[in-house]
Image 1 (spheres, rainbow, N blue to C red):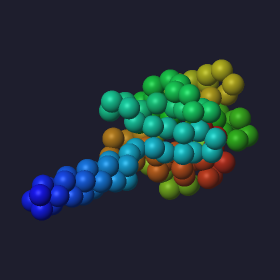
Image 2: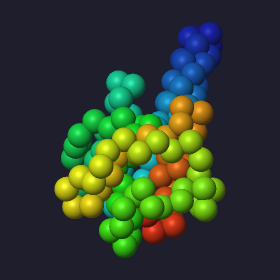
Image 3: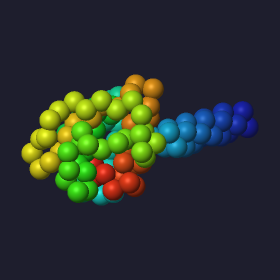
Length: 120
């Protein structure tokens, strides 16, 4: 009886540890009113708890706060390098930009958001 109780406690401890481990490493990112989550190794945008489009983390859709042309903006002036502009002006003055593979796209998104470069 004592051995059975110890085994149950070991399993409960292991289950609790694995549960806490998985929760602490869940991949969720918040930026402004947007939430981004990983599901099955793919990133999705969430709004009001509902899953939206799949996103490609190294491609960001951005708009300058003054709605200017992204080609006239100096990313280096805010400490960001390795940006490639992928599109001409899209609807609503948005542009697609690509982040270098060695960069963390969520850190870049946070910098852009803080510097008043709006993101979609």
